[in-house]
Length: 205
Image (cartoon, rainbow, N blue to C red; front, top):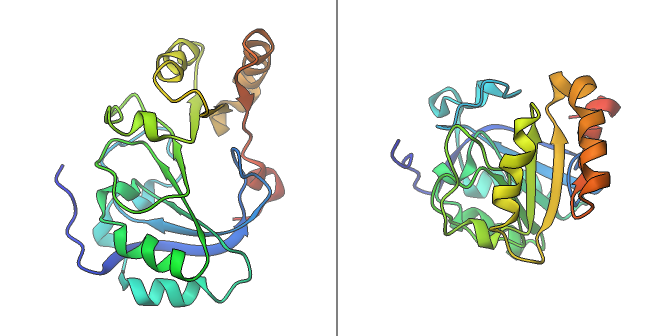
């Protein structure tokens, strides 16, 4: 799939102020910008409505920034869909000018654009991350759906930088089944940490 065309506009599925519920920055106030468009297509995805970028309104970068600055938090999380289908340079530059930290949650399957303070790489079996993105990850977050995902996670743990934070996160609908296995695995392999979707337990966006 080719890069989706963007000229200072981006297809925004939703944008909201909440708490980051996952990974290293869990618990922090964060402004989420969820972009439409995804060519990875995880069957267990909980935001499948994001896949078709044409279903979501194109918003100017200026409009996105004006909405973001209304809130006191200065952590911006760009997610999707797969946000790297779009050129994110103007967006991240504008966020930095407003004093935001810029975080991205990505499968890494499309070329990197934008200026990032934190890259959360969540690789998917359905479309592998690009080799040049893997060593740039600050955080590796692997979704565990079945027992085979542990071995798969290790293949990427061996490729990220030594300073990269390593997280295993239960797939939400399989959490009761896989969480005990994740706990056991982390106890045996303490370089990993648990990531839980706390926002879902709190019933917040």
